[in-house]
Image (tube, rainbow, N blue to C red; front, side, top):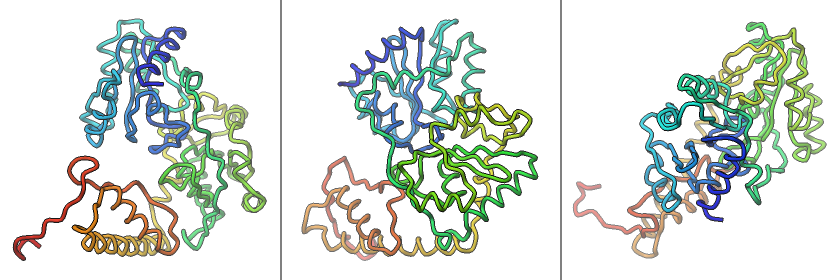
Length: 384
């Protein structure tokens, strides 16, 4: 199915739902910057593969807003798609909303899937559209009904992160979080961000490319904690670990019901920047908005983490040196492409002890895509 065909089908769904416009972001239910294939709806329907961008679909036109990192890439990938590229001047300013305000007639309805929009962003959208006489409908998942062969959520087993590598046990981290909760006078702390969960519970995974995180939700109480995760990702060792740390495991799908059954007379700390607009509406306890506690705690590195970061940088430097040595001794003898250098760099990194994976795809550029890298020796020593 081509991109224009997908857009045509999607517009039929919009018409059936009474929508004049629909917005598709690049995020997931955890407000991740880099998302698993299952939630890459914007990529599927537009063909644009960059990590950041928002797609706006209307009855007779569609636009993609992205930042300067992806201007050239977007121009190539959107060619013949009928989608117009809009170059964002400010990565954090929702210029697509301003466009809708200027384009749509008053009384028009804009749809979004609230599961993949943060509460914070939803409030900005809602306010701007209301001020212009437009309406925002939040629970409009139009993608699921038309995305055939949609990738499944990862079923890979989680990995328990050794405290020797991070300097603190999950028990110690939970104690720090609870201390801050007590100061803020909350009985619960909802944690939807995957990196915050990985840090708090000392778990890792392979659910998202280049990000060692696990698809899950977490709730931390003053006496007990919970992890919402698909059971197929756990084995007996994992269950023993969570029981040992007084962390109750529940199915991933249970999070909505759990939030809806929180005691109404208790306080729950919620970060509106990382809690989805959809889940926010199901929280029955008194909501105290504030920054995620793990996000603040993990910003302060302990001695073990600082030491390991230094070791990692030394290892990476060695891998780079090996790659440069190989490059200098191969230029002029064999054809070398950008991707060849990327693979070689990843190979030398993988030879280092405790290698887990790449932090992101290496950015290696030489002239146009697919160009062979040539070697031109310097004319004088002054050029070295």
